[in-house]
Amino acid sequence: MAIARLAQQRISALLLALALSLGSAALCQENRATEAPGMEPASAVVQLLAIGPGQQGTNRECAATGFLVNEEGYILTNAHVVEDARRCLAGSPGTKIMAKLARPGARTATAVSCDLVGLDDVRDLAVLKPERPLPAEGQPSFVQLNPAEVAEGTSVAVTGHPAFAWRPATQRGKVIRRGTLELSERSAEKSEVIILDIPLGRGASGSPVYLESGGVVGIIERQNPSSPSETVAVPNRYAVELLNRLHVRWQAAPK
Image (tube, rainbow, N blue to C red):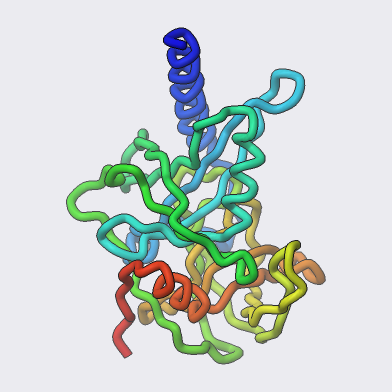
């Protein structure tokens, strides 16, 4: 039993090292993407990593984005991010999703394992909680939520970690329309969605969509299946409903 525990500890340590090394291999972004300028949403964005043994001795890597919603460190992301991570970690019992908060100018970052607090599979939303505080200079930032509906033509920004990017990248665009989509493979119920004219890469799921004037208004869900140059986001009111149901505190953006 002691040998088994030691082996599991070594595997966990190896997975963490792999997560951090892979995170440092940032891929080139489009010209529209720039390093986050340190605004509140950008400083509250975390990278979510899950790396486990795959077939034929290769590693299976999953990466996504989440963001802090209060000073206690609760993280909002997508339910499918949790599901993807479970598949990546299926061969590593006991291993969890890791959250990494990159400090400005830092070349290393500590990843902290997270527990699942709750999820809304129909709306593709999930809430995580790090097992210990995320290392940061001073008090970690968190976003303010704006549950108001955003109209077509509204200018927005998205900050996330596409393609294993080490630091969060910010892209800007507009809301081009609203609609409804099925967001869960387990349910035929449709959810309201926001469609953005921002093309985002893999790993951006769970990124906050926010107004330049302040306040997160949505959560990136997926690339639009019918148009790769567009991105689907979940309206923030669904996130507010989930946080309230889980009794997780959040702060409203000033009107």
